Length: 212
Image: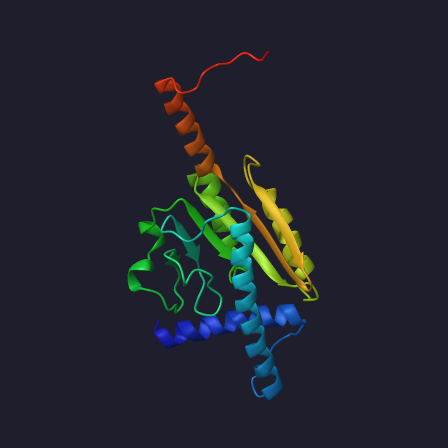
């Protein structure tokens, strides 16, 4: 499958998201107004992606290192291009080639995706946590008046029920007509904290003090 056909598939998936948000059956390729609306939609999503990154930083979530890999995003909807984050994707993305890896070669702590292009990505993310104990982060964002906004929020609720040990966190933020919602796990952080505590205990750095 050539690069051109991959790019066409990617653009078709973005058009599908546009139609779902606008309540359209399909985009009219011969309509100048539809194509302009699509361009505006993509630019809005890119700006929302930047705001979503700030939202994650506010939550104390760091997605900027090679301990994190983003799934199935491309040039127009990736949120990691300005960082060192790895990418697992068949779609064209303007980052250093050594940051694009195969899933089988991935040795990361957390997988992320946002506004997934494929429903299968969500199932895969849940599997990565439940079966392999990788941390995951799944985000949704858009305009509150989008036709699919409530559907996407309900999706997060449904996803939370599939986390096997229910050890997850969610957060929702609304700003004017924008919304951002995220579900994420912190298993690796918890393991590190326990390891540090164990090491401190072994070294005698933790002293049992009686309360007076």
